Each structure stands twice: as C-alpha cells, then as structure tokens.
Length: 149
Image 1 (cartoon, rainbow, N blue to C red):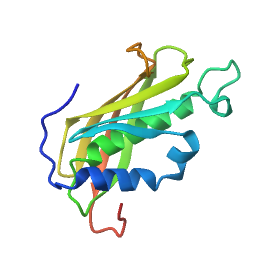
Image 2 (image 1 turned 135 degrees about the vertical axis):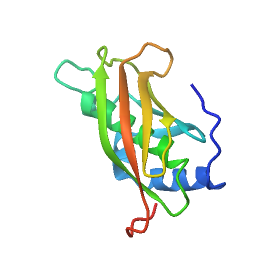
Image 3 (image 1 turned 90 degrees about the horizontal axis):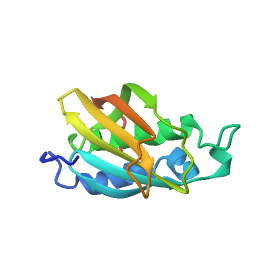
C-alpha cells in the first residue's frame, strides 16, 4: 500500500537516507533502503546465520528491529526538516518462521500527526508476499530537543 501524502520537507528523501545511513544497527544487520516515498519505505536484508535463533530461523529481534526502522522512517519522511523521530511503542505479530535468503520490511503511514504518527509494517521474504510478521507502531515527532538526523 502506497500513500499520496505530501511531505512538508521537499528534501525528505535525502534527510531519510542520511539518518538511516547513520544507524550502526542497520549496517550491522545489513539492512538497506530499496524504495522510498512520502509516507512509505521498503527495506531489504539478507539472511545471515549470525542473526538466527536456535532452529536456524531469522531471530524475531532482527525482524522486529528492521520493521521498527521501517515504520520510523516512513513516519520521518513526513516530518518537518528540523524534526527527529522516536518510537513510542510497537506491537508485532510473528505469523510464521523466517527462513528465506532475503527479506523485505515495508512500512506505510496510516495516520500522520503533528506529534504522533501511526504506521503499519510488514515483513516478507523479498521474493514473495508470504507475510512473516506485521507491526503497528506509534512514532513521535521531536523538535527543539537537540537531536538532528
């Protein structure tokens, strides 16, 4: 699902990419932006045995981390240029074991707000629409707090 939101910052994509690239966690997990628009983002990452659980499935923590960032950056794309983003809460449902060569974490803004934004995220194998996990997240717009992305 894509949105027809108009970002308040015309340079939102550059700002989102710069902030994303500044996250050591995304680098460690090998997560990259593969699609970006106002109010939505697609991230992809390879299976890596270093981030599996005892049965060889991708660890739920790695899936949740990617979805959290996807939701955060979907929301961030609609925030003012002087804002920072912070997750307030999220809920994740793990629907099936994650055992693929490559994964996609996609997120879309459901309801943008001046202070709080609600997003929906989905994790799938990169080559199918078989849902591994879904997330609902609430993100906060932070301004004038000394954090810049």
